[in-house]
Length: 384
Image (cartoon, rainbow, N blue to C red; front, top):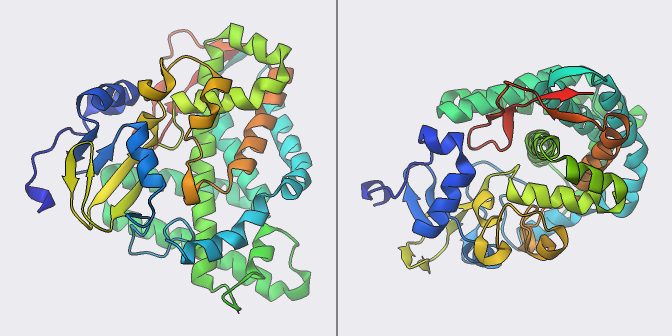
C-alpha cells in the first residue's frame, strides 16, 4: 500500500541535505505531515510530535526487528529496563564522573592551538565524544580509533543504504562489546569497578541480563553518545564562533552556559529524528495513517516550530526551555540527558576559559553532515 503513494517530498534531495533546517521550516508550513519513500510519514510540527510522544499505546517504539533496550520497547517492558538504567545518570553518578570529565575536557581544549586554524570536527568534537564515552563506560583508550572507524563506517553504510554493510558494521560492533564482557568475566573479582561491569551485575525480572540485552544497552548508549555529542560540540562551536556577543555574555554570566547550550541545540538539532510505528489507524495533520505504518519524528523541525518558539533562530533559553524537545519528552525522554549536559557544559567552560578567542576560518565554508546525522562534517575555526 505505502509504496504506491506519490511522495510529498524527497528528504535525500541534495538541496535538502545541504540546508536541512531551511527545508524543514518550509515543509512545516507547506506540508507538516508528509509522505516519502525514505522517511515514510514525517512530522514537522511540535504539536504533532508531542502527541506521538505522549501516546505510546498508539505510537509504538518497537520499530526494529532487532532487540533495542530500552529504546525500542513499549510499556510495561520499557519501564522495567528503564529502572535499571536511570541510576547510572543520577546526580551522585554525575558528581563522581565530573572530575574525569573535566580532566578530559581540559586536556583536549589545551591541545587546541593558541594561534592557528583547525577543523574542529575530527580534531576536537569527535575526539571528545570518543574519549568521554570510553571513560564513562570504563573502556580502554586503545578503543578510541576502532570506535572512530566504526562510527564512520556506520554513517557511510547508512547514507548509502547498503544493508549488507550496515549488518556487517553491527556485527563488528557487537563483537567488540562481547569481547569487553568476556574480559570482565575472565577477570572475575578483579574486573574493573566501572559502568560496564556494574551493568553486567544488573537483574531484570529476577534474572541476570543476557549478553544480547547487555550488548543492546551498550550499543544504544555508544551510538547515541558518539554521534550526538560530537554533533552537539560542532553545533555549539559554530554558533559561538559567529557570535562574539553571545560568548561574552556567557563569560560574564557563566550560570547561563548550560541553558544556552540547550537552546543552541534546540534551533540546530544534533539528533535529527526518531521513529515510531502506529498500532492503529490515526489522523495527523489531516492525513490518515493506517496501523503498522512508520513515522519519523523530526526533532530538527519540531524544535523550530514558530507556533511554539516564535522566531526559531532567536536565542531565548528561559522562554523556550519548557518546550525544548532536545532530549525528547514522555516516557522515552532521554535518560542520559544529565550526562550530556555535564559533558557539554564542562567542555565549554574549559574552552571559554582557555581558548576564548575563536572565529570561523576565512575562506573555509562549514560543511553540513547529511541526514540522518546532525551538525557538521567539517568546521574550520581560527583561534587567537
